[in-house]
Amino acid sequence: MEMKPLTRIVLGLVCLLVAIWLVAPTLVVVPMSFNGNKSLSFPPQGFSWQWYENFVTNPEWSTSFLNSLKVASIVAVLATVLGTLAAFGLDRMKARPANLLRMLMLTPMVVPGVVLAIGIYAVYLDAQLVGTLPGFVLAHTILALPFVLIAVSANLEVFDRRLETAAASLGAGALTTFRTVTLPLILPGILSGLLFAFATSFDEIIVSLFITNPYLKTLPVQIFSSITRDADPTVAAVGTILLCATTILIGGGMLLLGRERKGRL
Amino acid sequence: MSAFEPTIQTAEKRAVWAWRPFALTLPALVLLAAVIGYPLLTIVLRSLSEPAWGVQNYAWFFGAPVNLAVLQRTFSISAWVTLVCVVCAYPYAYLMTAVGPRMRLILVLCVLIPFWVSGVVRTLSWVILLQDSGVINSLLRSAGFAGIRLIRTQTGVVIGMAQVLLPFMILPLYSVMKGIDLRLVQAARSLGARPSRAFLTVYLPLSLPGVYAGAIIVFILALGFYITPALLGGPRSTMLSTLVQTQVLSLLQWGRGGAMGVVLLVTTFLLLALAAPVMRSRHREAGRR
Image (cartoon, rainbow over all chains, first blue to last red; front, top):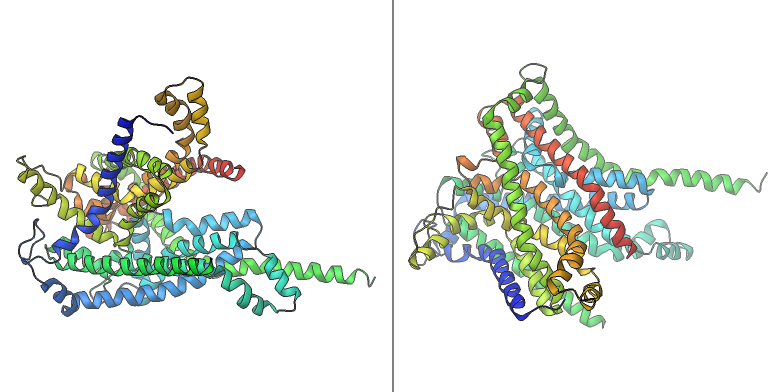
């Protein structure tokens, strides 16, 4: 679409502002994490590493971090297995029942967090699952399932089923066909599902806030209670560490992908 | 007779195969029923049965002006967030379609970077930015202006929520705008329409499905927001989710809290049902293309 120069400048400026609005809040934790004082006021005073030290040495923080890693790892595996199986089932079903079941399985994405949280809390109180590892794993798995389903289904949609027929016609059994033909081709979908499932669980807060107890806290719960209790810059340090970790992971992944693509060309 | 046998066998085999896909979805469905279905059913039942069977909890909810005020505020905050998102996302998504691949990658990264940090940390960032001794007020004061109160206000909640939800508006909008045939706009221009008129009568209507899709997603997600209003809002910007939490955790009023939850749930599903035809027709058009 052609535009007058003035319109062009205004459009550019507006978009620049939107981009700053999107990104700047993500970065504001970085300077706060080196604060010399125990406060979250701006600008930070002095410089110190004490909040990073606190994150590593204070058992409240380090335990909740390890808890989150543990829960998220189990959830990632469980949700990926269940989600991949379901995606295969839906792919090989008639369209009408498949659509219905798919909609059912995506409901965890649209049910308001608090409604789900009080429901799960009520059931967990009866089943004595509050503050337990299985409790967290079950709740997070169901919340992560839709992301795996979407990722794997998207991959199956472009998967050419004739390749399986070809393998079978050449004498491969069902399992061999799956292992040597189907799996390698849909692996990208499964892996991105795994990653999404891990991130969903690692980040989950609302349901976790209800089913937590002093014996089992995940990192987001610890962050939330720290923010509501006092202005402890350790949260800023945690935020900075998480930001660096994701940047390295995603940056590394993009570099690897780019190299692979170049190698193929 | 023997000629029929293979056919019968294949038919039998097919019947077994027809069950197998369903069996594959079964583990996920069982978990879904146990961890989503059963809890939601429990909440519905408790809202109707505590302290006694009947609709007293719903009567209480719709009878108290305080609750209705919160319900109305939940809707108005969600509507404001949606409006802010549409206004900010529209030019941004358009720019994404108009620039070269390198610039587009940067713009996409800006949309995705907020997802890199955990949601709670993002809300913490907004506390740091908006508080009275925060970044925005420090900058205002050093520029010689008087500070403004942002945290614990409705404005603060809307600013924070809109930033979190903006990607959900930009991405569907971009996917629709990407498919708009710009020759249609050129045709309007060549027939004598001024740029503004060509935009209003040709481009804007073609991009509306994206606006609808994004707006509905943002509005629905905003209705159920809990963390951002809890940390950025004050007592005068309470949303429905916070009220549900107070009833259940602080007052142990499972019936009343459950009734509020059911109201929130039903509203969400009603909106989804209203939106489904719009989204489906968009899907069909995309398929035709």
